[in-house]
Figure (cartoon, one colour):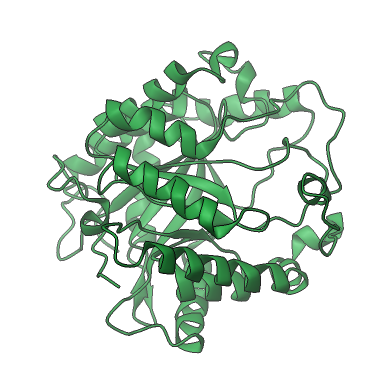
Length: 365
């Protein structure tokens, strides 16, 4: 294994993204020290987060979104009043912060199950005008009954809580939704055809069918490995999916691993803070992604170890970090993790291109 204290040799640039959501990815994040729960629905809050991310030279930020309010239940809204509920529109957030930034990529999440391709195309093309060369897109399917109810549509195939343990079961039951999503992606790209839009499309995927969606219509896949061995297995599945959908060999899919992170300079403190937030929330933090609690240096060790994994012609091109507490963990990423990676020769010291597509090394379609 590469010595974590020595510069990384013969490695392509490491890419870093952050996923922004409310007060952070821990359900009790709004109760953490330094949180700004009273500002979650203000433009200034999001402007501060994105400009901080750009100061850390990050490749892109993603903005979470959904048609219905957050819920711990798969069946619809819950009755909890001790967690954040509601979001601003992700595309509008991205458009609002675009003039305040000049380099970082802006990637909103949009629902493709209940949103017409024409509307998606227009909204994202408008974002591309506000942030030329920096706009991206994360399409998302929805199986929630309360989402469908907004449009007077019947609920899609329902999921039980037990299904959450099996991504393959989930994607299998939702296969028609992913088929529809593939059609939406293709239609949106056709609507962009002939226009000066080169938006990278990112897809969060956990199993074969979503991997095929990413390979068919995406440029970047966000995956959720739990270990280096798991990352190798997923990369093999992604490569198989690319072959199954006849993705051109000269347009390889970029792959980022998602990690939910709690960071603190003091050894053991991040784990203690996680335990405190878990207690406040009434349950241990659960996530589709691996949860990391430690120091920025320890996280740098993990990222550099995981990125050595290579199989089936694919490797981890980067990482999308989900800050558990905002702004605390974002500041730890930009002001501690990034300098540590720079010290090891693993991360840029300046933006060399304002265009997200080129920065990620994506080839034109």
